[in-house]
Image (cartoon, rainbow, N blue to C red):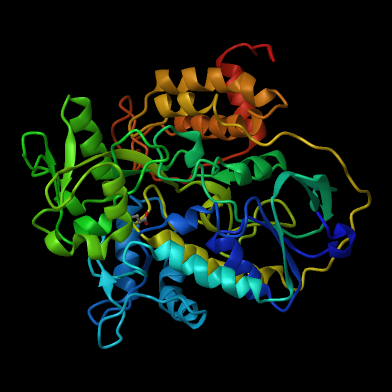
Amino acid sequence: MSMDVRDLDDRPVIIGAGIAGLMTALHLAPEPVLLLSRSPLGADASSAWAQGGLAASMGDDDDPILHLTDTLAAGDGLCDAEAARRIVYAAPAAIEYLARFGVRFDRTPAGALRLGLEAAHSRRRIVHAGGDGSGREVMRALVAAVRSTPTIEVIEGFEARRLVAEDGRIAGVLASGAAGPVFLATARVVLATGGIGGLFHDSTNPLGSCGQGLALAARAGAVLADLEFVQFHPTALDEPKRPMSLISEAVRGEGATLVDETGRRFLSGVQGTELAPRDVLARAVGNHLASGHRVFLDVRERPGPTFARQFPTIALACKEAGIDPARDLIPIRPAQHYHMGGVAADLAGRTSVQGLWACGEVASTGLHGANRLASNSLTEAVVCARWVAESLRGIPARRAQQTFASDSPSPDPAAVRPVLSRALGVVRNREGLEAAARALLPLAECADATSGPAVVGLMITIAALQRRESRGAHQRTDFPLHAAVARRSEITLEAALRTARELEPRLECLT
Ligand code: SIN
């Protein structure tokens, strides 16, 4: 690392450079800020892989109240209605703001936004860019804007390994890169680290997204919320490649159908059929696969000849898998796609730890409830980044009393992946969850590369064990109904460890 990091002391540090991190940095300008990115800017962020775009009520037949109604219905009784209201009402302005940054949204020949339909939306309200390349296009524009903003200091190739707290407040970040560990003294840290797909075999997320922000926050004592709600996308391309290629809901929005190996549209009994909420569809597809069928997406009639032009990224993935969508059915299966849970945060990103903010997928603001409405997540990141930046401004700088120098290994989720994939899938039960907790506890208690992912996996597992009902994306065969009262869940690392230890006498760490 060529710069002297002492020169950067006291600036806010944003960890993660997807849409949430980049937008927060841009909103903070001209206040100096340090943006920490594990990879070259834009290279490894799940934001860049987003095919669906941003949900916003921009159509003539639409209104934020309709967007709110759809969001709350998809969230299955668990959304924070006020948080959802504020976000959906701010969404149209956020789209206009992105356009001013040079994001080239798809438009009609007359220049109006071309609005797409996705599952569980009652109106066409998905703003896309580059067809199915929305995330890539938004990232292109934001990376360019960040690169040309002199007050944003980008540190690439460094990964945050630990948050340092003094007197219960954030005092700095220990990070590590090729040149070794560095200590960044700061009283303001924003987590914008994305999701947890790397903890599952079947996921549409980059492998490197393995809950790093959740582990950092949990170890700093933060409260995490709604961790049991893991969203599975019903239509990932079923081929050996990992991570899996997503086949956007927008394809079904344009009329594609789901069939099995006999050609039967097996969803005829499911309300909403191909455009049912994502949790409903993921279970229907999962059940059909579990009963020995294969499941395919049929795009031959609709969208038909326009498919490759409308969905170039998906058309390329099919081609690479040897599938010709004009002629062949596209094999699909559900895959982990998004985490509704995260670090408990208000809309300005404030967490339970003083000096720690969270924005984007790593945060749990209550917008998504038990099941995220499609394309609400990029919208949330863009909208909330402004409020996070406003809340960071004006917090006085506070120098750390001491500096720290220690290194720890980069997280390795390999041992955690089979455990979560088995127990925390589309359907769960007590036996499987308890077995997972017993397997994860000793891994979480060891100070090695597995422990961060294991801490996150354990906390998700305990949250899932403690939710004795089925709601949204959390379906338990042993508790198949809603509980009488819908309650969001909260958990700390200390509480999760205590619960796991009570399941079984503590196992000795063997590594
Ligand atoms: C999709 O395009 O189907 C995914 C959109 C999203 O996850 O919001």
